[in-house]
Image (cartoon, rainbow, N blue to C red):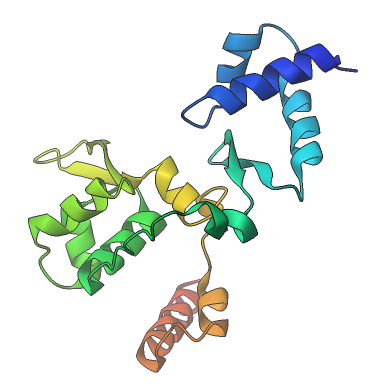
Amino acid sequence: MIGDGFVRAVEATLFASAEPLAPEEVALHVGEGDVRSAIAALAGQYAGRGIELVERGGRWHFQTAPDLAHLLRRTREEQRRLSRAATETLAIIAYHEPVSRAEIEAVRGVQMSRGTLDVLMEAGWVRPAGRREGPGRPLLYATTAQFLSHFGLGSRRDLPGMEDLRAAGLLDPVDMALHQLQLESANEQD
């Protein structure tokens, strides 16, 4: 059993933090105790309320309930419209990370302008993720916790799969035929 004082300390730490925190980071502030149980208790207490305690990428933070977020916007945020190239690049990075620029270009089938990655990094959705061991040591790219938070994902495992995309009507017939050929080719090799 965790004490009320400990749960309150965890709550205060998460509330006051400007960034989402991992349980280990919370423990640095509140000391020894079952931080994970305290977070679970708080998440249950805040479920369905005006603010919620949510996990994004293994890190916890308070956020306005999605159905009430519109009440707090004084000015409408200008919606950022990504170009088709930026959207495709973001999807490739999200599904294949860490990935190099050359790999992104190979999947897209066209050369990518430098500005495409810059736009995604300015948005805070993509970050450099080190270098690949090999010729030229190319820079690798990966998504960020801000990407997960913006798109309401707990982790990359929550990204939609082929069946989800097909059910939503987001795959055109050419993509679906190509995917089917890839499946058949993989089955023949087995």
